[in-house]
Length: 424
Ligand SMILES: Nc1nc2c(ncn2[C@@H]2O[C@H](COP(=O)(O)OP(=O)(O)OP(=O)(O)O)[C@@H](O)[C@H]2O)c(=O)[nH]1
Ligand SMILES: [Mg+2]
Image (tube, rainbow, N blue to C red; front, side):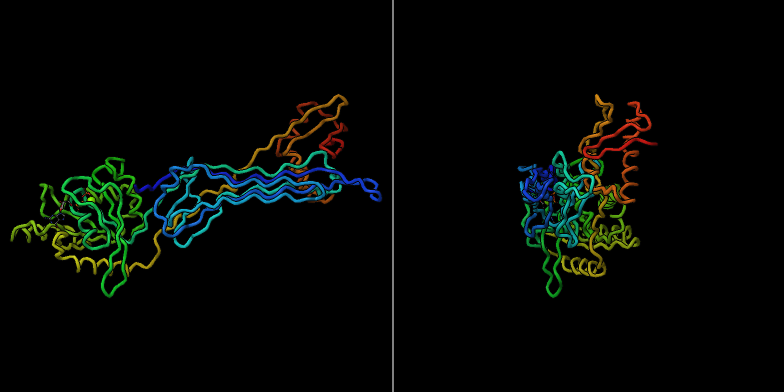
């Protein structure tokens, strides 16, 4: 089965908590904290694995968690770092935030490695003069969690489109190494097939057969909608049509109908060079042949879309078509679109809790992980640090809460080891 989409859950490692212990040494009167830092949590990293071409594995295993950092130990023993979670994906996988659909990473165009979720830092050491002996060990930074959608965009140079039964698979089997199923009914091909064209004397190229595109495909009709995305990456489109009208269809109307779906899906697709392969010419009678091809040419060649009469079954007319496609590919030297990053998981902010209470001595006590963390990285002795501290108190709503509790000028506020008088 060709799986080209999967939803998974990823989680980076939590940073290890710090350890608090106290030295009691003979010549160090006050002792002091000697707890070790917690280790760093593992990252979640996506890497391209060559040779992989489906997202099948992600249907079975849906949870991918990096390891947490170990907590710090006694005597400044640093906790071990958590192991990274390496997720191997096929080239061309686009990673999106499931909730918003925004692109986090596009694993193509040489982008072989992306750290998508960073592991939490281990706890930080207190370095400020006011915080020499913490009461509690600082917690490590939290893990990050995210639901992501993986989408595999087949990376082919050329996309093959056309109504069911026009001979796309026959064409692919004739000009490439692919061996798709061929049969005289609609929707024989249920998933995109890839094949490599080996042109004598020229560089080869990859063709993807994009099945199931019919009227309304861009709105979800039929099975082609899921596959439209594969065409986005191709550089040239071969549009196959049944020129003999074996099923009584009008080839010109068919071409317009499919192009309408492509355009509705992504208007940029209409900027791609396109060639028409007018297939099944072996089934046309003398004279009728000329008419059908002439009509197609008159309709499309003024718009720059060349028409090549072919017979995928007999092999007639295939060479000129392939050489033209090769030429078109050579004219386009730019890489296929690589999506820009639109979503930055590192910007997810954790709202860590804190509490503001008045104890029985009338002291206002402000505590909680958010406060602890802030005190851990703020040097109140420095002017900048003190400014930051004041801003933090205001922006986090702590001043408002103190006032709501009825704090007066000169009252005492305690935040762990830090004690100060309140003045506006
Ligand atoms: N006479 C004639 N018949 C052809 C030619 N190419 C394909 N066919 C026939 O058309 C039918 C459909 O061919 P496929 O290659 O399976 O068509 P498809 O476009 O892949 O069809 P789906 O996978 O259903 O979308 C088969 O019976 C083929 O033998 C051709 O050049 N001449
Ligand atoms: Mg087919």
